[in-house]
Length: 231
Image 1 (cartoon, one colour):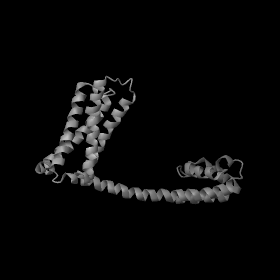
Image 2 (image 1 turned 135 degrees about the vertical axis):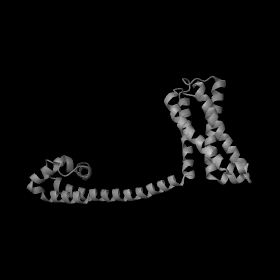
Image 3 (image 1 turned 90 degrees about the vertical axis):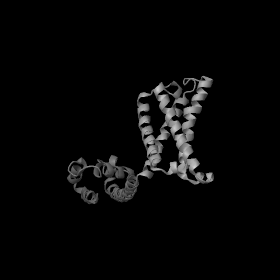
Image 4 (image 1 turned 30 degrees about the horizontal axis):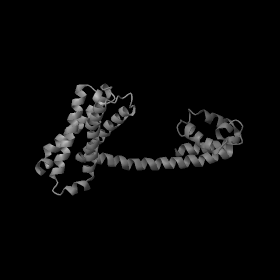
């Protein structure tokens, strides 16, 4: 059993079934309009039973390949797959059997359809195993995380600059009647800088014309120009 579990063809076959299951979930979501598996067409029922049996068989093979069975519980991937298999067995076989025996309709149990779809979507989490088998994906994810740190630092610097110049704009423009509705409070000043200056071009911003037309706003114009240079 260990030779089967450690063989390359077994790993490739498992990844193939996982990929097929991901594609099938999308197809089923598009064309299967039934609320439960019991009400679905025969082709959807067959595919659900096939994938449930395939993943259960794969888990049994991996469990039997372990010499000390208690060691399997220490493997995080095995616990993760065991949880998904348990959920798959529950919504494919147990819930279907319960609905068939009790003859409960989805109209009388409106949450059954939503719970069934939620359990099916949880199967997509098996695609995480592709990351373990493809080192290139893991390298790409690590690069994205490092880039996210750099982007987060840039956003933090931009937020500090917006806050600083928001205080300056509020200090010089809060007493102006024409701009009181935009810079009357510190919160309005910060939002104004973010929306009208941080996201707009200098020549396309209508506030700049108003700033430069007022002589008593030379300090605010200088502050805005300096802020735009920093941005």
